[in-house]
Length: 467
Image (tube, rainbow, N blue to C red; front, side, top):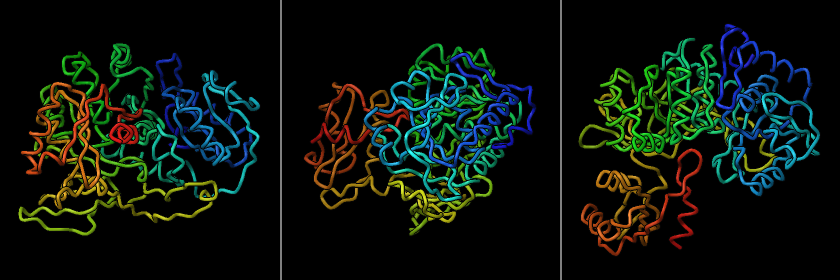
């Protein structure tokens, strides 16, 4: 079965959520077989995901039985969902029961608060290698999808489990949305070794979130940079969580200050901090930093995971012995390519095991990699190339309690901040740091930086503000 769930201890807890459901490996296998008995045709199925047992068991059954799930947030705007539906014409929905009436269709099966709905759309030809679809922008309902092939998810789960040294005793905490590649990998890499997974809908700022983890003895947590910013605000380093041993990070680059904070906390409290890096196009993770080196290699993503290879394109050697270039990756977890319409689901493997990330990275003399920016996140102001990512890092280092995001074009950089008191200071500070005239910058004070469910910035909303 998918992720070898039939080979694990069938009496052991596999999934427990904060909605009241708890499933053993035996329960999981039985439900997968019930799905198999439905004899569903090979077709696209829209899975409206929540972090709960019902959502997860459907995804696992579809992967096992060779349907092709598109994982979407259950909270996705209805208009955006309908647009995706019109483009990809799913034959079925797997959705929370509370959403069934709004979706419509014939009820075929239900389990753990979820229901399978048959739509009016007939199945259509799909590439035989195609196993799963993820959106490139989960909160905006982007029609651009990442096409996974059979073996991608399993390979990444096994290699990540190996590098993290997961055992059957692990109890992984899935706080990131399961329709987000990093959240899905937390699930897969624990289940593939017969460990347990806690599925949590509660927010990081809710006391119930931490109570659920403590009560159920969660051992490993993975967050994105925004997760750690929230955790610092709520006093995570003062919490009593005796069973929590591993803290991992992915989904973006931490500031050096935040990286140092969490790595130091782990060292001083007998835990371990594992920095990682990955993308949807690589089925989640492609790099891992050994926790023993966290404070020695601050800001690094480490080296490639087992059976993977990192490399740089268009390498430039620097005076300090480091090398920079666009980050590339080869490995069995590299997906097939993209789809922007239904017909693209018949396409063959276009990446062929190699993915160019679009991230600009540095490799130091010891072979460790560091992300330093995005190819598209540079402006040319007064003829000088300026990194938006680096500007944000400078601002956050200067004022760590404020939130900053930078956008713009080659005429002007727009700086968004949540701190009204800094409005007059920001331009003079960043002008002095970059040696650029103050006219190159404009500051916007907003109540809150708009972010999606994964903590990533909604740049389209910021563009509306800046005009």
